[in-house]
Amino acid sequence: MIAAHSLLPPYLISNWLAALPFPALVVGSDHRVLFANAHMNALFDELGPQNGYFDPQYLLDKSDERQPTQKVNNFLQSGEYVAKNIQIGFPPRNFFLRATRVVTEEDQEYFCCVLTPQKFLDDVDYSELLDTVSSLVMQMDIDGNIHYLNERVFEKLGYDLSQPELAVRHIRDIDRHYDESAWSERRQELREGRGVSYFTQFSRRDGSLMPVEVNVIPDRFSISRRFTLTAQDITEQKAVEDRLREALLQVKELSREYQRENRQLKQTIRQQGHAKEIISVDPGYQKVLRKVEQVAPTQTTVLITGETGTGKELVAGRIHALSYRADKPLITVDCSALPPDLIESELFGYRKGAFTGASEHKIGRFQAADGGTIFLDEIGEMPLGLQTRLLRVLQERTFTPLGGTRPISVDVRVIAATNRDLRAEIDKGTFRQDLFFRLSVFPIHNPPLRERPADIGPLLWHFIQKFNVRLNRKVTKVEPAVMDLLSSYPFPGNIRELENLTERALIVSSGDTLRQADIRLEVGALKAGPGPEQPVWQQPSQEELLTLEEHQRQYIAYVLELTGGKVSGKGGAAGILGMNAQTLFGRMRKLGLR
Ligand SMILES: Nc1ncnc2c1ncn2[C@@H]1O[C@H](COP(=O)(O)OP(=O)(O)OP(=O)(O)O)[C@@H](O)[C@H]1O
Image: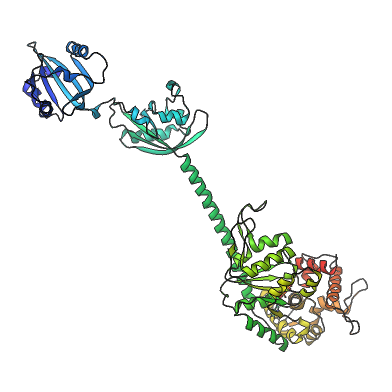
């Protein structure tokens, strides 16, 4: 330090003191005021007449418990006096006092006193205040050494307030993710006077972790380059965030689920679009088509009956397409293809956790069909318990998903189809009569192909054109013998069988003409009866006419024999009969075939 005061002329000292922005004065050893700057004079004015003398009482430190006079005497001897808590002025205000004794060459003694506002103090004691705040507050130096902890740190991190020496000494002791290189970047920011913020986890004394948001700012009042670190416990916030994140995930899951359903719907609609064309010239079938057109624009529930493969699904598609719901989904549920215990969740959906394995919500087909039409194919296969639920949905138009609590209302038109004789099922007690009445408000019977022989030709041509495109063939002619053959065939599989048969015939045919031989490969064998060990299909004579059920039973048994008992897959009976394997299984059960 340079002792410049003794070299400076007194006028310079007084000018310098006059320029200070806070009270300053020079007092002689006899307490006479030799100089007081304007700020000091203002204080004196508040205190009343001073007679040109400075009362040493004003130098007493109010917070210092030591004997004040003793302190002043010490000062007079040592030449340095510092007091933290001078109260002066009216009303009294706190000042920090720094006084220096100056002795001139002529042995004259002066005291230069400067009073500064409290906030300029280096060692302001704000710990009491900091103990009241809810954040964790620490004072640290640029190297991360901790010099001060407020009570909240002790409390939150589980340290004993009576043993502060055991508490945290360095920021790395508590920062679980302390990283030296990250800290050196932060240090640089702090050195340049900027604050830093980051998220981390503080380790509690018991090893558990507390998520915190940390802010470090340079301590403006600190001369020794300290930094104030405040940390906010964000456990709650994190929990809320986690819950939100989980909710968001669920929303995403749901949205994925909806997108999946949507794709299914679009696919269903596309499939329906392909099958829209109904080929028929048969006068009997025209009546059926007129009924379709009549009922389509209404809200009425429709029950379509008829043997397998007669085009019931096609008719349902036409009803939907001609209704005002045409731009909404048509959802098909094949009640025979779904295991009985799954139909309910398929129809009505389920909430997450409704049963083991329900790891996400699933919307049911009824909800997916909202605004549109649901087609319940093979309704006769629906388990009795579910028939009761369906009846309630038809009556109330609301349902509750499995595991759900709130009912969902839907606007869905129901079209059902069956190849069973539902009245017989009612007699057997396997179908609810009230449901039957509810469904058959407008029944449409789809006659079998053998009852509309005029349609065989147009349908054959329709399928030839379809498979010409699909199989890249150019069949443009059909041998008359083919038509003779097909006209005499009973078509137990109806139009689906004709469709499959045409596809197979086109595969084996060559050139532009479909020949009887191409058909015979599949059907001819059935009629002609080949080698002795081959099973033979014989059309029953007029005298021994069979019931339709018996006819089906024999024919299915015959095809099963042909396939060696194979039902599904390539070369299986289901493929030959043009049926879905599940449907065939169902039919076999019903007909008593194993
Ligand atoms: N009149 C028709 N014109 C064109 N194709 C038809 C006609 N009728 C039926 N088909 C076709 O025959 C096949 C069987 O028809 P569909 O599936 O509608 O019958 P279904 O009576 O619902 O059968 P199942 O009872 O086995 O469910 C389909 O490929 C369908 O496109």
